[in-house]
Length: 240
Image (tube, rainbow, N blue to C red):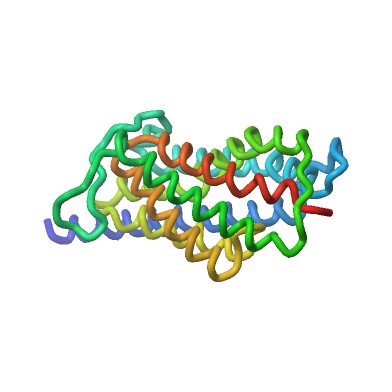
């Protein structure tokens, strides 16, 4: 019986390791299309806006690949967390009691995060100056939504789903959903560098936590969307 249990644990570890490696390769593919996008269309005068458009169009198939891997490996949950449930207990990070509810408390926490990210992005890009255009301001909403979906489908949902599907611990989903996100944003547009990596890792932890505790995608997507609105307001309107 003990040998059978050990064999099962070994198979689970091998499965989780294989999935992690494949997801790392998927992350590498995302970095590749960021540097060399599949599309080269130039409908706008701004090189920044054109690059953003081509990157996001190229990143959608990568997000689809991440979802396909999740569906294939997470045999019980599959894509069950890809829903709009927003209710659940908000567990304290360090144990104990006193947690709130996602449906009532997440907005307040999200607004604080948005303010911080907006200020940091503004200050990081300020030396180059800003030139705001109405056309680019209008693009912020669709770009923010598309980017939020892509990054949550690659950096958060797969790890949380596999952690819940194949382990009895919350650790895998929280750790991978934060560390990978933080590392990749070290080289991001803004916020970036060491500060951007730490901020992104903390954000990733919180968004992974939201998926775990609500068994849904709503808050991870919505908060990421709001953060993108703040950041892209300045990214898309930088002075050329």
